[in-house]
Image 1 (cartoon, rainbow, N blue to C red):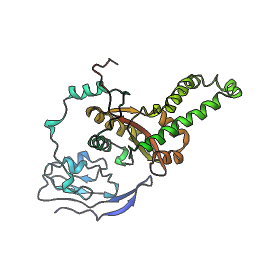
Image 2 (image 1 turned 90 degrees about the horizontal axis):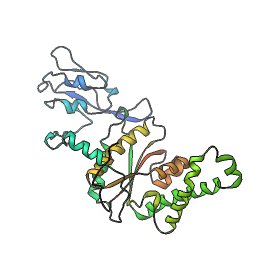
Image 3 (image 1 turned 135 degrees about the vertical axis):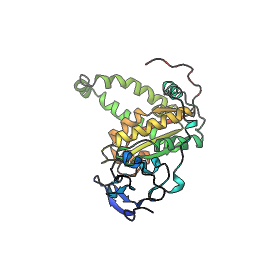
Image 4 (image 1 turned 30 degrees about the vertical axis):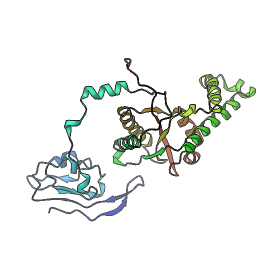
Amino acid sequence: MGRVLCPASRGCSSDGIAKYVYMISINNETCIRCGKCQRVCPAFIPVICKDEVPALRHPEVCIECGHCVDVCPTGAYIHGAFAAEDIHAIDRSILPSPEGLMELIRSRRSNRTITSTPVPRHSLDMIQEAARYAPTAQNSRQVHLHLITGDEDLLKVEAATINFFMRLSRFMLLPPVKVIMRPFLRKLYDEVPALMAMNEQFKKGQRPCICNCTALLILSAPKGYSFGAQDCNLAYQNASLMAESLGVSQIYMGFVQTVMFMMGCKRAAKVLGIPKGHKPWAIMGLGMPAFKYSKYTTR
């Protein structure tokens, strides 16, 4: 075997996130000195010296992206974070064509014709798996996925959202408040009739804020994490395209998102069921549509 850097140990990154320093080694016998591991490593850990097996330096800065393991043509690069059974050959014969992928992107719509038919469990699993494979800043993988499918929990989110908007609307419509605030918040005041109409729908048993979706996917990250918004929304896009490919409607929950931000992390975590100290950066409504769109318009 090659040069073992260090045993697995626990450390802490610069932003306070706990991490492990894994054992890394290179097999002298199977390494062909191609230099690919050095070229792909964002932390510059492998160092090529002429035609020798790469020297491995500063393993503590490894971000566990797996580039080294995935690019090695002979399997000589061994990393403690990745078990042999978790390393898979890519079958490029089943990858979508550029034209096919572009057609999927063009055809994706926020189809709000949600039926009462629940989204199949297998589809929900694939949507979440797609989200987990999204890139994250420094491969920190701080995005937390939480799926809501229970009817009581969905109603809890709907009620919290519509009730918040109703309290806000009643306050905004108080004569002294309206006189002072309307000149500065005209767009928000223009939304009040729509909010009132949504409340009437809610009273009749509908769930307008979540578009009657049968599942909600909450994407959150620790409140102090600098790239929470970016990472969660990258994961959202992955999940959205997977849902579209499965024939599942996906809708960005803007009303819910707005209310959760205004509530604050503590109350939002309680309503949504996400970990304490997390901020919900993206919320996806999921459901089976009554019909599909047959055309798309140029944008």
